[in-house]
Length: 279
Image (cartoon, rainbow, N blue to C red; front, side, top):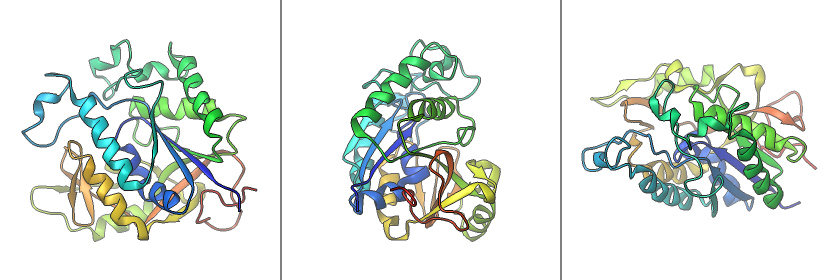
């Protein structure tokens, strides 16, 4: 059995734990060499709770450094030893949500989108990691970024560009609508939170596009510890979590992926392994 190598590319600290934490933990536990590349420090994020509100971009602008320590703790929980910031710490900055003025910052990661002034340099930065790590599979977001965040769109676009001809398979983290609806129905929403709708969660894909379903039931504890590490962004609840918007969303014992490019998955059924069919 060849040594497998996995590269995950994300926009902000916490994205790795929310979208594919179980898969990363399972792969690491099974001996896969896992590398995580995070594009920004999440400087424009909101903060949960009163104590650390002064860290935000509108005040001390120290949130990015704090979130880096959260990322380090989350990666330890997932067993991911190789974690990197794209281009090095501070090379790219969180662009904020669509329509916010933070997108005009000269280091905003939205500048790395296709056609943007930093796209080519960001692709080169990721190519350098790919050439060093030589991953069999790259995991990132779908073309809509999961929910349209400019930095997620940039992460998708540079991942696809950098992986072309270099990575055998590129997959996107997605969710099947039926499974999301069932999970939402089963989630007990605590007082003070409101239940999510499928559209609130994003990352939805038609069932015919989904080709991998990874059973992460044995790694729920690792994923939950990783989510808890991102305490400025995430509050844990029974069976799920909430962001600063206090919308309760479930976690799942299965994480799903669709093929973006490269070697197809075996036809006729959902593969249980992101490496299925690779030689």
